[in-house]
Every structure is written in C-alpha cells, then in structure tokens.
Amino acid sequence: MLSIWKNNNGQATVEAAIMIPAIFLLLLLLIQPGIYLYDLCVMNEAASETCRVLTTASDSEKSKICEPFARRRLSAIPQQDNFHVHSSGCSYEIEYVGSQGDNEVQVTIKNQLKPLPLIGFLSDMFGLLNENNCFEVKAESTQVSRPSWVTNSPQGKNPENWVGGWLP
Image (tube, rainbow, N blue to C red; front, side):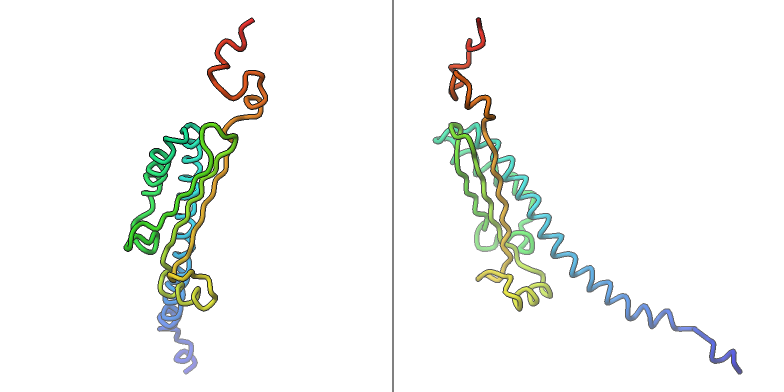
C-alpha cells in the first residue's frame, strides 16, 4: 500500500506548467534592454565615426557630408518602431559642432523607440517615457581633432605652412 503513495508521475508536468511561463516572462523582460543597448551601441559608433569625418570637413561641406554619413551608419538599426520610430518620419536628431579648423568636434544623435507592451505599461507607470510614449536614446561623442603638438607648433594650424617646416 505504501508504493501507491510514492508514485511521482505527473510531477514534472506540474513543474513545467509553472516554469515555462516564468521563463517566457523573463525572456520578454530581457528583450527590451537588449534592443535599447543595441541602439545605443550603433548610435555611439555612428557618432564617433561622424566625429572623424567632421574633423576633415570644412564649414561649407559639413552639412552635405556629415549628416548623410551618420544616417548611413544608423541604417544598421531596423526601421521597426521597437528599434527606431520611423512611421511619422525619421526621428533621428543629429547635431554636430565644430569643423576642420576647430580643435574639438562633437556629434550628438538622439533617437526614439517604442517599448514592448509589458515594458511600456511598467515604464509608463514609473514615468520613464516621453510625451510620445517612447524611450529616448542619446549618444554623444567628442573628439580632439588636432593633437597638442600640432596646435602648439611654430608653423601653426595651417597644413600649408608645414611643408618645408622641418627642412634645415
């Protein structure tokens, strides 16, 4: 009679019925930070590369060169609202400061992404969303365009003065 009460058939089914929804909920909660971090990584890299382009662009060229260059790099982010809000026009805001003649250049890129449903509800409760019910992602890169030995050289900042500057 004791062997009847020690039967464990069905125990794994009950445990799986509890664990499977918990695992799916955990995966759902990990997807949104992954999307956010992916956007942030791509935007940081695009801002950094655009800084390098900005150091070589003149004031008249920078509007024609830098923004298309940055947008090309940002095309690695899918045009899906959970990655990048694109339905009412591109939501990227690209700002750049400085040019070829400046010692320091800066590029700032801002983006919006819609949260996943469960995350959106929780984020809205805590006030983490903007007026469009989206997360805001911001990447900024500042780089020195000329090393100090160039700016302090007796030939000055103009490369044309450098030619023959080291001749005896």
